[in-house]
Length: 59
Image (cartoon, rainbow, N blue to C red; front, side, top):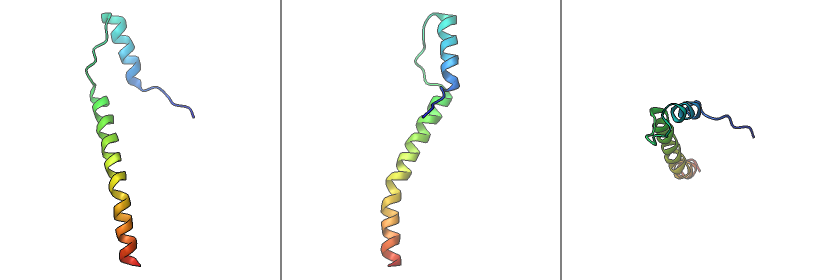
């Protein structure tokens, strides 16, 4: 499976080149990806009980 690096890695490398160090502050994109991952986990955690409930309701 091929995985392309995010565009952020190039920005981070440029920051290291320009300043000599890496600032560990999360970018807006990093924050968005973390929230999206959290919401997907929540969606998956509630989908099974809802599917079970609907299956019992329709049986």
